[in-house]
Length: 562
Image (cartoon, one colour):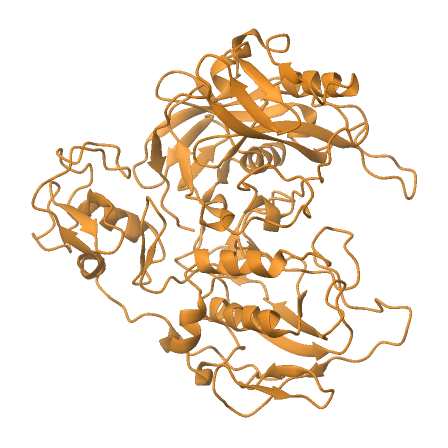
C-alpha cells in the first residue's frame, strides 16, 4: 500500500516549500518533564519497508483507540475515503484489505514531537505510474533535516540508496544513471500526541544507529525498542518504483550500495575501578587467557597505547573491475525473459551503459551473466557500473538477495580501536564482567571513496565508548567487531540523521551499546536480544565466524584503519 497514491500532488517547487501546520510546542522547559511524543502509524510493504500513514489516518486510529476500540477492527474510510477497503485489526496489529483478503503488518511508533513526521511533514517520490509514495520514516526525517538546514542536496547513500535528492529542484537523482524523478514535501495533519499506553509500543529513536536500521521484520510489541529481529539486517535495500495500494503486486529497482555516546565518568555510586588495558602475547584466534582480575579476555595482541596502523595488505589486492565481474559472474547462453533490476531494461535488450574505454571487448552491452552462487541474472555491464560506483574493493554484492562475493570493505576513516576489561557487570549479565571498546577517529580530509573527496570531515562525539558482556557470546561479537574494524565497516562518512550535518563520521549499520549502567538513550542494557541482533548485522556485512578462521591474530585488532 502506497498511501501516497491517494495524495494530491500539490507539492510546491519553491525552495521554501509550502507552509505546514505543525504540532504545538515541541518540548517542555520544565526540568525533568519528558519531551512530548507524536504517534505515527505505519504499514509494512512487500519488501519489509515501513511506510507511514498520513497524520489524518494516524489521528483517526488514535481516536478510535481512546474510545476503547482495541478489540474491534478500525475501518479507515472515515479518515481517508480512498482507504475504504482497509480495516486495522488492533489486537493482532494487522491491516486487512476486504476486497482481496491481503493482510499486512502495522505498528504504532513514537517520535519526538519536533521531528519531521511529528510536525506532519512527509517527503514523497513520484512513481512511474503517476502516484506518490512516501519515503521511509528515517529517510523522510533526513530529507526534512537537510531541508531545514538549507542544504542544496541530501545524499541518501547512508541509508543504502544510490540517490541524491536535489532539494532546490525537488528531484531524486540516481547517481549511477543520472535518472531523475520528482520528489515533494507534503503537509499533512500534524501527527497526534501520545496520550497514554493504548498499545504497548516503545518510542522510536532517531539517532543514526537506529535510522540506519529502522525497518524491522514485524510489529514491535514487548521487546526493547532497540532490539531488532535477527532477520532484519538481511532485508534487501530496494526502493519501490511504483506507487501501489495494499495488496497489489510490487515492482522494485535496485539501489547499489555506495555506501553521542556517554562518557565513562563516575557511573556508579561506589568507587570507580580504572579499566585495565588488555595486552597479551599472540595466540590462537579462539584461545582466551585470564587477566589479573580474573576476567576472560582474548589472547591476541591489542596495541592499546600504541598507534599501530592496520596493515594495508588487509585490503584486497587491486584488481581490474572487469576481472572482478568475471570472477563472480558467468555468461548465460540463454537470456531469461525478465528485467535487469539495475537498469530496469529487459535483459534481452542492451544495457544502458557504454563499454568503458579500459574494458576489453568481452563485455558488450548485450552480455548477460549470472552470479555464480545465488544465480541472479543481470547485464554484466550494469554490474560493472555498480562496482565502479562503489568502493571497488574486489567484492560484489548481489543487488537482489544481498549475497556478498569476496570480502566487503567500507569507507571508515583512519582511527583507533581500544579494548579494556572492566570488573563491573552489565545489567542483565550479572555473571560476568564487561568489555569496553573505545573508538576514536580524528577529523580529516575525505578520500576518493567518500561523498566529497578533498573536503574535510568532522567527528562528533568521539571518543565513543561501547560495552559488551565479557562472556562467550560477547567475546565472539568482539572478535567479529575487530574484523569489521579492519575492513572499515563500523563507521562511514555521510550525513547525520540526528543533526542533518553533512560530511561527518557516522555509524554504519552495526549497532553498538553506548551506555553501561543505564539505558537513558535506549542504547544500553539490559537487552536480551542485542548480541544475536548485532551478530546478524555483522553477517549482513559479510562478517561471520568463518572470518575468524581466515583473519590471523597477527593482523591485530587495533590501530588505524587505512
